[in-house]
Image (cartoon, rainbow, N blue to C red; front, top):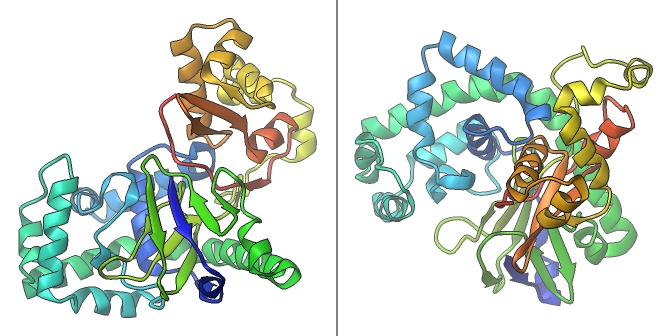
Length: 349
């Protein structure tokens, strides 16, 4: 768990990005292409993007690009720029202008954190090679044009809705009300400490620096850039989505409700039962007992439901506790187009 200790003065420096940030959208969308998180929401997008990347003969290049990013969607700071740089042109200019000393230091850190060998061309980036930086910028732009740009209307609609939600809370109840208004599995605000759910422990103090919230359409967990070296402290978190956001083929509520087996066909009868019993929070062991299943099988069901965005899983001590999300609730009730809440970081069942 990461904890930000905020003084009353710090609260006057808490802000939210004014619009979606191009480089952050690149980071999180690249991460989505490497996994199956929130499959019900993002699989249509994954299929469409992969087809276009293959058509543009960029599949291999984008696979190599993804190797620059840490596991879990984190990236070297120079690939993120600052929260004040929103549009792609300015962001790429900032990437191209990164000092060589910064590139070298971040490449060293990248090597330390990665489990696999980095591509050979990453060494050229670390040395500030002009042609390597230009090639990187060109690839980022081509990827953005395929994976992000066609969906900017959806991004901006969801971003605006989230910004309005937070603004309403802040105007009604102050910054305290805003920070307390996030689901507990995303972050918790209590007694001057803002805690985000992460598998490792750390404490941060702003010491006069601003803290920027970045709602992200493509994020599926709560990555945090602490800003110790290159960028200011930020918390990027998932925006709510609508099931079927990429297609108009979503069945009407009446059509779904008229067919009682639709959920069974979607996720399978065993997982439909598991989703049903998870209206109350349960550990994996309790889920196994409730379903009369082995622990590995209950864990497998929980993993699939979590990847689909139907439940969230949080570690509490030695146990992992699973809870149904509003998306899971909506599917049980036959509702086709509903808000999908931010999902917590995946953790072993």
